[in-house]
Length: 101
Image (cartoon, rainbow, N blue to C red; front, side, top):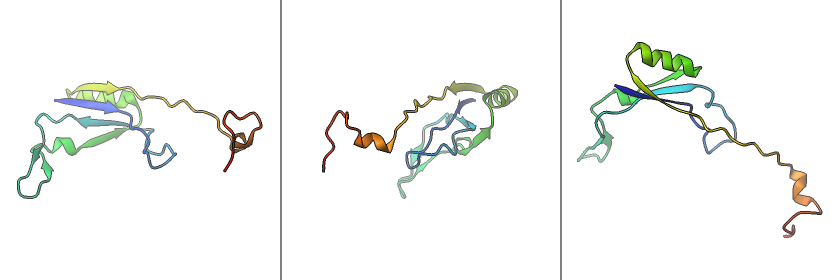
């Protein structure tokens, strides 16, 4: 059994970081998904691929994987570089590109 531990990224639809604080352990599927010929839906014979376990720290997720004999691969989170932006900078006199309508 193998698993993947990662910290989810923020959604593209919001600027908040609501669901990015926890660590997620999910099982890597051993068999590829199969397309159902009648409905066209993707299906899998494994139910483990539907399970996502959430942990508050990386160490808790790694301890869980070690206790249950899972070979876990950790994906390190990418940190965002925050840039300070001000609305008033749009109207600065030394702006690089001219501001016009």
